[in-house]
Length: 185
Image (cartoon, rainbow, N blue to C red; front, side, top):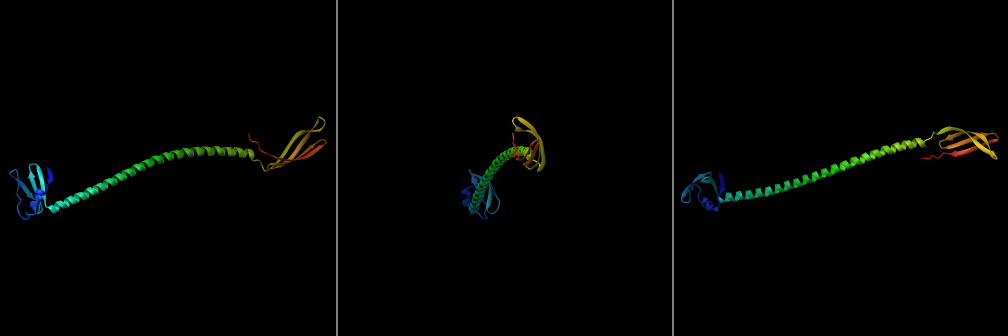
């Protein structure tokens, strides 16, 4: 069943019809009119239904309709704004996920470098680190006369990288002060 709002044709007559019975004719045929209340009537034409209202009620309904249209437009703009915000958040999330993956790769590379440098540091530390105090000794040859080499013994003390050695041999003795420099290959 369709419902129509009948325009000013019937509205003019309604102002005069308070308390009276409304009779409507269409193509010389009287239409069935139902009174809904003092200000509204229902007219049935075949399968269609027409509503007859007073002008003030009709104007009020039109104003309400316009207000509802404005509210619908406002809500549509709010929905569009939320959709744009959701799209921006989705793009932000995609960029954040990419950034997190890059950061994980960087952390993995930094971790690998850290362990490599720590291992290198430990290796160098073992090479460079010497005991604080130690005894040194050894044997060697000394050329005292023309092409005559004599055996020499050596005894010394080492403190960190400094060493003092006393050399003893037949008709030879000497003192040496030395410093140790590590050579890395």
